[in-house]
Image 1: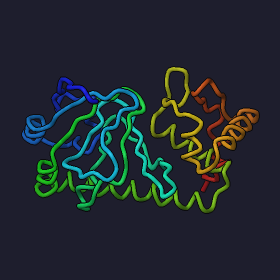
Image 2: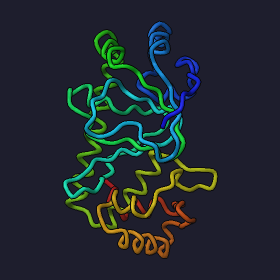
Image 3: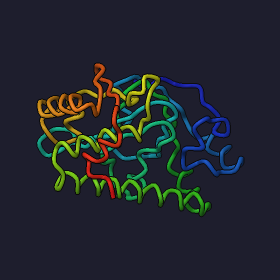
Length: 235
């Protein structure tokens, strides 16, 4: 269960520049500060569940979150990730439908909750904020469309290479120059759309080809250009 967490004023938030709230004025930020709540979630805890009704949006202050949707077979499919500055849960408010995914923390995280009425007030009164939300929605749609196309047209090796590059862009690199997120081999298989055994074999092949190095659950990208070529991302 989440724990109460000392709120950080939006104007003093170190990651605000990365979020859709970056250009709000002091008065708008004060309104959000007055009405938001901030909670601490431990690794593995659920922020919200698929099928429930969203009463606001969530902004990840610090941490990493996995969003997964349950398939007809009863297996969860990872649809995207969220990290510092990202907002989640807003699609449900915009389309008036229940949440389409479950949000689970990949590590200890602090997350702020902003009630729906304040979100919609910004949408209605601030054109720049509305534009940022449109751009964010379009970007997420483009990513989802590319994932569907990749599943249909690319080989498993190509999908794995592109997924590694996507994870690097999403989470960055840590002090050891590894992708800054720890995922199980089962989660990698989920992302790529194949069996866990196949992902383990393919990761070893990429290691043998000196494209990556494996350090436990961590993965270091040794040859980014080689992965780009393998993923067929060169235009």
